[in-house]
Image (cartoon, rainbow, N blue to C red; front, side):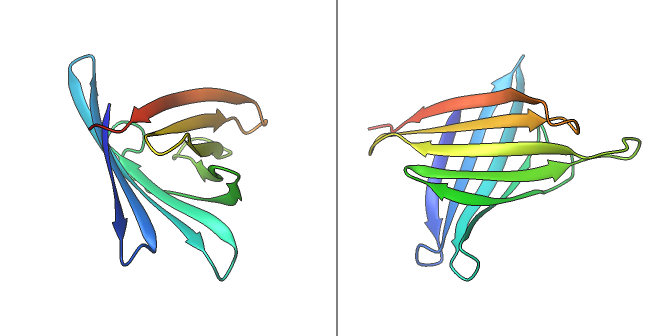
Length: 122
């Protein structure tokens, strides 16, 4: 997995672009992260070619000591209740960060879906 992180609009937003392959098939995605000063909440929008189909996942949550935790929900035609998706960003120093995501069933059961540890290239 490779990623590029850039700041947008004088540092108001952080853009996270990533790409990788699974079983020989390329996938890519993008997240936009922000801290909404007016509502004192972290926000994230996420699209990718692996998980999201043609939808956009919007999530909201709180800052942590070294990152943030946001939660959103998703669904599709034919399911009665939406599923939850929690994304955690942990900054592990100047050269490393971790993105971990959890699927949350309509009954509240959680399962780790993905975890990626990124290291800065020199």
